[in-house]
Length: 398
Ligand code: 3PG
Ligand code: MG
Image (cartoon, rainbow, N blue to C red; front, side, top):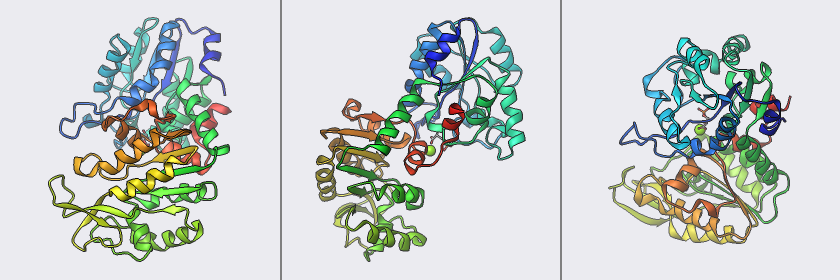
């Protein structure tokens, strides 16, 4: 894989470099114009600053959300351009389309060391198309804007999309520093994790995490399960879960996993059960085997936090993906906070995998320096741990 250093060796001053970034940031639910966590923008700054300071004409592209292949103002990258400019200390030029007249004119007018952000890649059907020719045609247009391609969008490397996969075949291609660091860390955790190795998984669905559970189970000492997905496991153990999130079709699979794990899958022993999915709903801590029929579990309870913290405390390697509860609502944040804090205290190496878990760390105000590595990719880091080949990474390697 060629790196930014290799690219600098080519001499980039005055030359146009297309940088694929993952600027898919979350917005405030109450004020949708406000970026609620700019971690992904900050994460790509070192690459952009390196190129800018070397005099390159930097053309940044990204997706935001999942628009349906046509412009949709709800998903404009305009607020991201503003924030990126603030963080770079210089305004960023914003193109109102991705490969159309605005983008072409802006790319032509770029000065050395200037940064341009193109409008949302997914406003173009070719970006995510399953049809190679359609994706290829869009990749041709993107590639036509620049002379070099840098991929620093770790959060999107698991997508076989035009800007991630096909563009690399059309331009001399290089891995940005973020992609390099992420791949290096995940390789270490996958290939040579120091034991004991504890994995903490949360999030709402077992089905989303099934492949990674199967891949990790033979490697881990303990797999701690919280979040919405724990209720399907509790049900598989024969407990009633009331109105909690349940994937009925996964109960048998969970029972198989529990049998296979021989005690290494650890489930919550208590949960915070509420009358409704609401911060103001009545709620109590109940035993995990006695969830009332009219309640739903929205967080793991304090005894579970203590149990999980003990397992985490003895680990030399911890990988964490997915919140333990509905941390966005204050009454249900203690589980995620407790587990996150326990991870920051280990005498070993910890990785927070995931856009959502990383955002949870920052939203809850937990000291980021307590973690070994905070990944910018959720799906991407899980697919890496599953052992899948990542289209964005293979494209850079070829
Ligand atoms: C993410 O947020 O997981 C990445 O930006 C990828 O987005 P996607 O899941 O919509 O492809
Ligand atoms: Mg995602």
